[in-house]
Image (cartoon, rainbow over all chains, first blue to last red; front, side):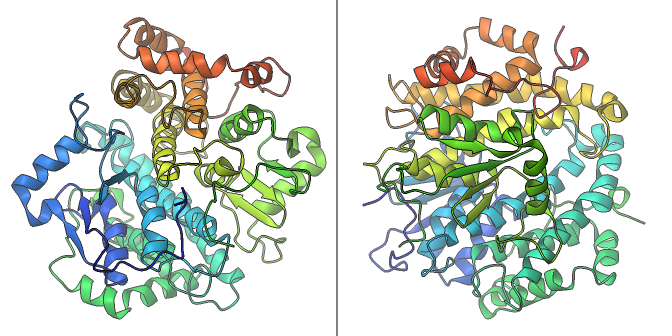
Length: 263
Length: 263
């Protein structure tokens, strides 16, 4: 036993405990990159709250409860998503991906530093297309209504679509450029960083359709959007996106408000 | 060779390449938890830009440049801090800590899941006391002056000191409570998560002295502040904090503006 994500661990077999995903129901949100990892690698999993709304929500609330009689996990969880695998409960999206990546074959197995490279790309993609996208509609208080912070949101979204989004797109374009022909972000194979980037791009395309359309048509980030289409077209991903398991965007991280998009 | 952070790897010896830290000079910022890891474990390192301002800045800028002739690292870096260790260049603070933790003895070596537990605690501490603290003075545009977003900053800081800060403190109080007497966040030993939490608490104490004073005096988060004092009093940490290597707070993540603090 080591304390490490071991890339040589066998892919999930019948003897592996089931993977259970606990997250707010009905939205893609911060659980979506996890779902994409399971789906892209054909790994069975249970999306608990969406499968069993009543009991699932009860379990979820107990896992993030700060009551002193909280169940098995010895570390309380600040927020979902939470992955349950046997006796282990993990939270924090990049942390869950770090755990799953090698186990699901989404990290190259012949490269000692791959896990750090992929974790780095993942953290940057989450910053750029997920965390900062959320800030656009909640720049003042995450616990307050959008309508109460709309003026600030319009300003923040303007900065996001004009400055931050192009900067993050440019970063990933450069990553792909330095790959010199590689079809994926790292190591010449699909990794979980590609799935995280795909989801972020898909989310901002929903939230800011006009701004993203202009950025795509400019042609400056061709490699990024080629990667987006490549991931979208993978057999397992395509089947998932067309299934009922893929939840629609609504009031989560990626929201569409006309006034936050470019005109 | 594995793709994993191996906790059994020997502590740095004379045969290990030197550790070089690249970050904006003169501020603690997102490099500070890394410095604390080196200092707490008595690991030699070079703080490049602070040691050699001119050549150090030139190197730093080349590492985050998006020019196509960028040097060795094959993945461009979005932003510092960047750790250089032999041929490996890594960015993203939690990623650098993930790499260093097991190598510096800051992760328990007898626990298969320790690395994920500590990474989880680290990500939450960075969210609560570093990332969200930065948002308080730049809620609209990271690239614009504070003065141009002061009104929104006052509102965001108000939400931070009244809602978010207590929520994150409560989370870590609960983590320590469920430890049932453990002196550190995880595994009964100093880990890098403790150093990250210490730095975050120290930073917000500088930024929001009045708000933090009230939260400390309320007594609700006694275990958290006991941990803060415990880390602060460790011989190596104490010596570092009293040295010239510990940089003062100024215009980085943790800034003090009277109008953002409670009165």
